[in-house]
Amino acid sequence: MKDENGKSENRPAQKLCVLFFIFHFLFVIPANAQDLHFSQIDINPVLFNPAYCGFFDGDGRFGAVYRNQWATVTKPFQTFAATAELPIGRGRGNTSGFNAGAVFAADRAGTLNYGTTSIQAIASYFFSLTGRNDNFLSFALQGGFCQIGFDEDNISLPETGESFNQNKVGFFTFGAGVAWFRQLSDELSLKIGLAALNLNQPSTSYFGDVSTRLSRRFNLYARGEWQRWSAVSLMPVVGYQRQGEYNELLYGVDVRWYLVDSPRNYLALTGGIMMRHADAAVVTLALERGPFTFALSYDANVSRLAAASHTIGSFELGVVYRIVKPQARYRQLPCPII
Image (tube, rainbow, N blue to C red; front, side, top):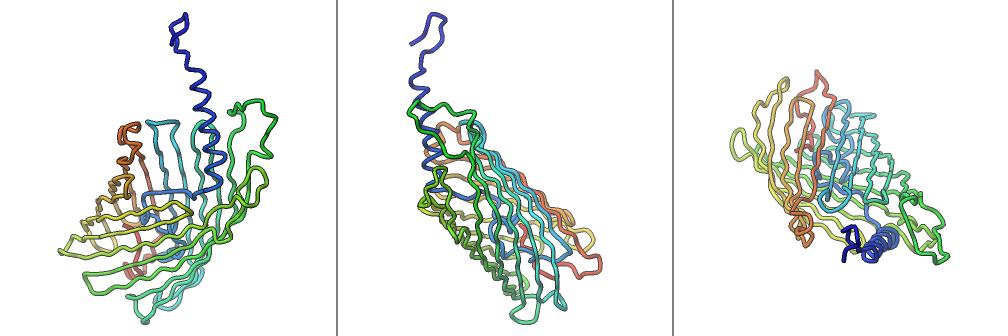
């Protein structure tokens, strides 16, 4: 129906939609809250598992990633993260070491600017199981402060006499991770990681309800590399996450082409595709040039939202910089970057 000016009179429907999204973001999401999400699970591996903190050859590693999701459906869901990792003590020949790291992350979603801001610290230790640089185990603890909230200026609630106690909730959270790497031969390597986050299940209620808590998140990750040809490797990957009632399964394969494989002028190109089960096809392209890694990924939506999103899920940009020791033997430690 249209008014005398030719404008559509869908105000009741619009109000119902607005109320639905308010209910969804403020009641459903806090009750089953989820952590920040990225498709590039091992471009910057410390975002997926804290046990990869410091597990590289060099004096430091710094990364950033930006994700823009569902721009064709609603106001884009935007996520940003920055990481820093520093070795604070290395054993002889880099066969063991203590490391420290920090992760800052923030996201914003929808017209309410509903989102999470967090800063967490990581302490990790890795050691060689054989005394050589071909078999490593790493452990890590992670903890910090998070805040979730929304912009209450954009909310219009019915006059029911009810109101929110607060529009922001802060809490502490901690987790742990373990990772294993094995160089099985000159052509074949394998790494496996397991992490458990939000172990304390902090309260996330806007109404002071202590029963509303952030679910624990568990993830399992495995990546292999088979150098099938002299300059080309096949790299299968699988990642699984579970948080509360939510599950995510990623599986796929990358192909890495070593264009220049030397200590002073390293250049490699990687491309591949992963499937996020029943949700999206993820295409990733990464360029490693010396100490830098640049990555671009695109999620093509294949879920039931595909009709509304026109299959456009998200774009993700990532960059990692590693401070390399000039005197160090190249790739003395396995570097878990695609």
